[in-house]
Length: 363
Image (cartoon, rainbow, N blue to C red):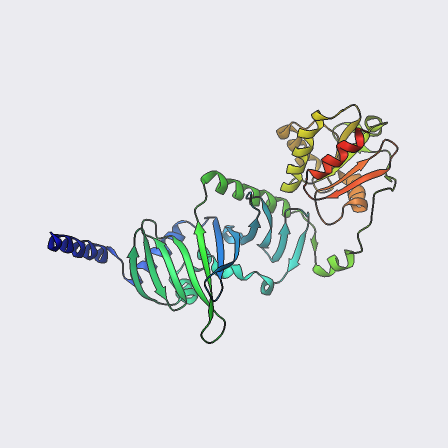
């Protein structure tokens, strides 16, 4: 019986060995996969291990190829909302989800994450060999091929030949090294689709964003002004969808919601407000949107698609109001009293603003 078991084991190992491609054949199949899937969105999880092989840093990033137009290397938050990244098109730009402008940067400031995107380095034999070196050996374990290269270890899916993991040594001291592991994760289709749509929506809007430099930002970064207690300075407000606003807000508390269409945090914050408004006395409070970035045509489509029924100020007046009150990106929110005094100013997406607003208007 033991002899039979041993023979079966040897036979199984022999079959696996026969099915395992050699280094050159494996590289060809990897290249073929990435050439056949040029538009693949990569979601990468990086795990950094210290000299004791304990996980010390876990981060994630995504890579979206844009064909001949370039690529977008970006980050998402814990719920897979796009937050920020670097766009390469005609140049290198920082494009963030909460600021309607492109920040001109240089290739040398491109995140080192760029080196760990298989789609960038496995789309030709030359690129693959340049990045990872020659594969010294190939073995098979379960549903993975493991290639030992001169620069680390590659794990490859046996069915598709997609790279699923990269391990590299980070040289630290003579006998003590640290390690980086990169996992190329297959997210559920719905999440993949959501991330792709968010990124493409942001990049489409970014075509019309003004271009600024980091020097421009440094000049702009004056100490943050405290707005609470000051009078709201603008009168004769006119929305493009509801006409004159002054009569709508007369004698009421007002939430001014500063947003633009490609800002996902803005949409979420607006959603929080719309869910919250029916729970309070709407005879006392009104919501006004202020969008300084988008055209009337695109906002008309937005209103139809999202069934928006509150006033939205756009164009020149929106730009003037946003220039005066928006600080540190979007969304920004103001709560203004019936007498025109700014009671609360909030930066970012948070329900705490609504909690404070509810306390104030219920007094």
